[in-house]
Length: 167
Image (tube, rainbow, N blue to C red; front, top):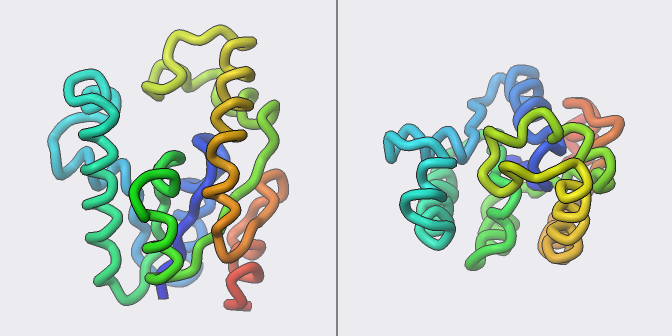
């Protein structure tokens, strides 16, 4: 079985995913890391040099490359479910878990990482909160297609295991 962790950047996909993979003894795959290893460029460099459209195509390819795996915890980029038929494909190929958090909590978490994340680079705190709220409004319909939703505030490997009926 594969478990796809989806949600906005900063919601805890990578942290929870690593813990979950460790607990289950399964491989952990971060799609952004996979793309960076494949291209030899950082996500920021890809956005700046190739543009978002090219990045989203690479992201789709990286996602599809996980479908052949028997067991894995896959952390997707925050936008991955919103492009192509990625959400439908994840639902067909594994269990999808939306890690939900309100915009204010996400903004608080992301405040110190603005320079490492191309979509929020250079934004003031107020701009960051407004950007996240607007992005969530657009992305939530995609995120809600996940088979299950967990509360990101009280996120743990156990809460994900319970959500996907592995406990």
